[in-house]
Length: 478
Image 1: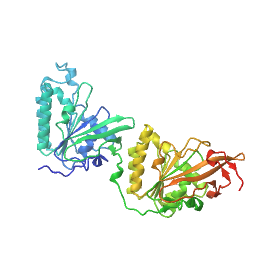
Image 2 (image 1 turned 180 degrees about the horizontal axis):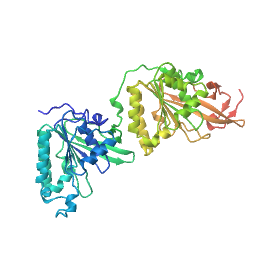
Image 3 (image 1 turned 90 degrees about the vertical axis):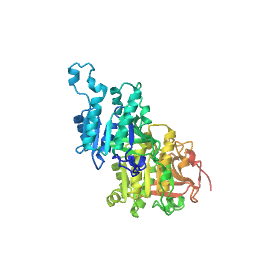
Image 4 (image 1 turned 60 degrees about the vertical axis):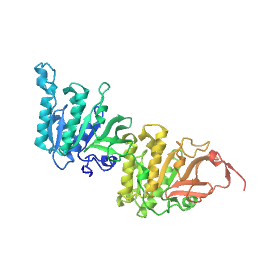
């Protein structure tokens, strides 16, 4: 009976996609075009083995493979290699079969060398790169399928788990190999970078969909798509204070844990500063808070905060506040979600700021439907984990027609706090209000606010003004 324990694939994140890893003594196909990371992933699979591992290579010399692996920090010292790549001797000798000799084309020599290497090493793991090269050694497609099927049964029958790569082209398909293998993993290039998708995995569930893959130090890293329903945590519903009494009064105590709050308004109106008050207040109480800055440097944010009395640097040194710069064009939503999950599940973050939505959109490199879908998944996950989430959302209009949020994200928000510019008697001033709050009542007035050396200062309700949301209010008599 096949052992149903799982084998570590050796690729960070891939175990999550494969519901724990590979099933031993089975064969898996790794398909993809040139440069998608197949060879690197195969080497990681071999290096993760506890016993003997064998690399059967048809295209690259072993020396080149080892050198390329070393540049990524993948250790190949304990791996065995069978180098079946063509050398220059046959070409220089003008052999009748160009690169390959006649005995190699018939396949007898190749078969003998593979069998010899397998019997000498008795491997627990085998990676064949690429399997499609074997087509050159048989007469037709039927013989090719028979040879590959026999080859896989030979290896798995000896207790090996096999991974083999393919490189389909417009004229040569690898679809016939899908019927032979127990699982199919596809690596590809997409607009957001490299991707990985599992389309078949016999005897096990797996995480469907397209996941992000990156080749960096250590080799291939996989960032699974976030599935919010897979995550949940018990938490106490409670208000998170801003530390500003008047703002808390507007919100009937503050924003609530396990909810999403959107702070919306035009550029420069004070959204990030307002959000930072919530993070600093929580961090000062000893609660872990994290700010992700898509549009501002952490040093600039710290300086601006210190000027108005918010001790960002001190709280960062204390370890209760973390401020992370995010380069939106250098990270995918899957990678960002993985970072957020680490902050929540491993570091214990209870308040998370994403500043802002427009910067996050750049990481998608797609349309607004992508933004809504990805942001919905991330926010739902954070809700399930009991995190107080703050989204900073830039609206386009400075004054004029009221715009609550941008990009159709208002439905994501449990609470919407809007900040507006207004022109009054020739002076540009600011107002704040709450548009909705699902979890409790809230104050339905507008208040003028200022950013001073002591932080946010909110005035009394602006009851003598009409038309504040138009940006050009009028004074009315009491």
